[in-house]
Length: 213
Image (cartoon, rainbow, N blue to C red; front, side, top):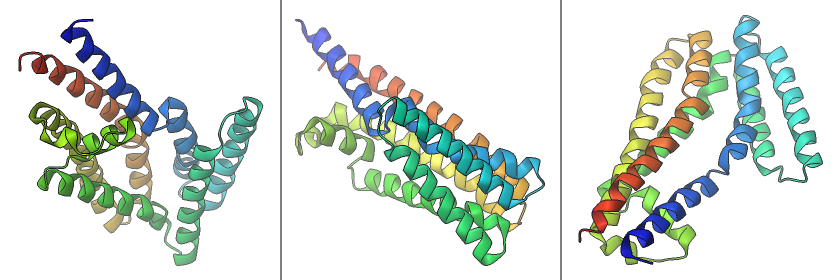
């Protein structure tokens, strides 16, 4: 096997590890379905929380049954339930429907900060995650080309989380709940999937340069 084949194999491993880290497309579906159903019903019923919660729980139960029949993990499904449950509780407890989206905004802010800080300290989070899954320790940090491609990939996620915050925070503060729900639906799974795709492209585009070193 020549050096080019080695690097192709490395790229394949990297992309598989990223997919594994996010649970694959099944993980994306299991995590987002309940929230997506909530958003659709919430907008369709004129900002009514109760039918949206009932619909989300129903969709989650159907998905859970399917996963049980398939004998697959319910971890992502339960994660989605917990997120919807906490968000619905917060909205009902405060009496403000826009608070259903507050936890999501906080989560994006935390992820944005983590990714940005990791770049500032020259430990790009994407690279850290990938290499940790590989079982390596600190060797990757001294490899300039690897650090470069991981930094580029991490910047993608900084941009994604920043975009979400720039759109959702003003809508939250202005209490435009219907628009906030629509924005979260658009900037949720579709943008997430696009981010993963761009991450794969960056890793693949950077790999051939390593053969020149």
